[in-house]
Image 1: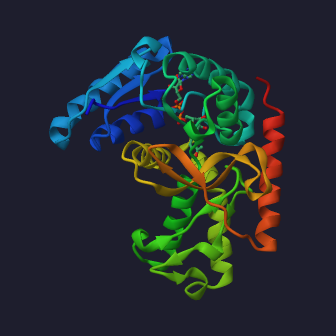
Image 2: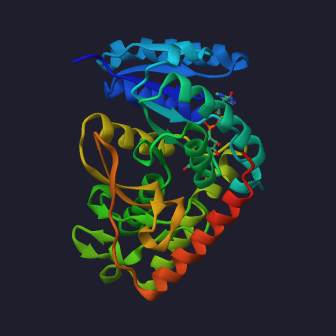
Length: 311
Ligand code: A3D
């Protein structure tokens, strides 16, 4: 079987960790791409990670570049190009700068990687993945946004910390846009198969839901110079792995909806199946009235940001 090629577009904080994790998991050979001014960063990280692999006992080839010729033919492209938040900023404050960057990236990937499975991470996520799909014209099965896997992992981590149990035994998922009105579905959260509501009082669960919604901001306030990068990278790698290994994993992702959950023509965080066909299907579940209202609020926020996105 030919070696797989994975391109990280943006070699910053998340891009570097994506490259590290993809190589350590032997998902394929890795290209780290950045703009010419940051080519040294891309080349340096590729070299540094290549020197880590003998110690880690993993086999992958890595290269850094600022030329799309080197990216050409990638099987998977993970896009983190753009600026991250600084303290006091909302994700929407990044819109004007990042839409220009995403348009540039999408125009180049349309030409050089017409068959790739593309995962967008740049913020504001739901608007950036929409813009990427518009510019590339790629099918919805091959353009997906990473947010739900991260938001759900945060929810799971906070529940595990609260109960002092293994994160492995906590199942949960978060629906909706990647903003502070995302919808952590408490009804679907369980610990070793036991509904979380049997194990924690309502006020503790409410506090965890609130912390999950604001978890990105909590890290921006701690880091001061940027936003989270380890967990976002791990989340996107799980999505890439599901595609490359045809795992048919059920993962919450920003998918292009055409009527599912009553939403049409926009990206929104929902559970999907990822396999060799990319986003193979959206899993639609029945929501309670209260959940439907929360989803409608989150969808309205996404639509507002998309409406402000000038391509
Ligand atoms: P950072 O470390 O600044 O890396 C971004 C990289 O993009 C830099 O190296 C830039 O040089 C590069 N870049 C700029 N313009 C271009 C271009 N035209 N083509 C290619 N590369 C370019 O940021 P980061 O890695 O911390 O974050 C990247 C993005 O992810 C930001 O927009 C964050 O807001 C976003 N983010 C999203 C999540 C989600 O859950 C969706 C979580 C965390 C961060």
